[in-house]
Image 1 (cartoon, rainbow, N blue to C red):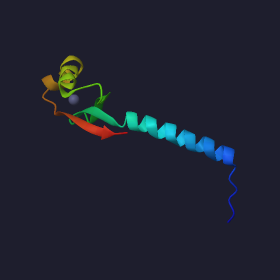
Image 2: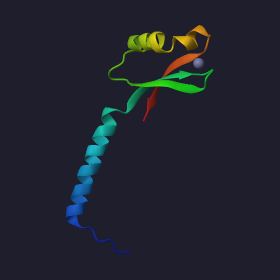
Image 3: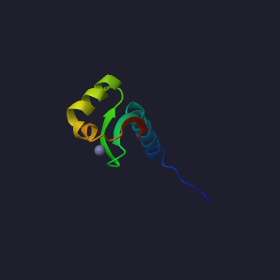
Length: 80
Ligand SMILES: [Zn+2]
């Protein structure tokens, strides 16, 4: 099978892939707050900007109802 590649398009496409992978690289790591009892994600936070301490504060401030009800909440790292 013969494939004809338009050099200009090829270049554009390559640039696009480079840009895309840059974006992926910059936000690949997330911290996810997950509640086992509710079986749902309560929030996702870019790991670059949120330390574990900050995550604790967020849970206390926004998801305290789960804590009060004795739910199992974990912070887990995810890759998007
Ligand atoms: Zn819950």
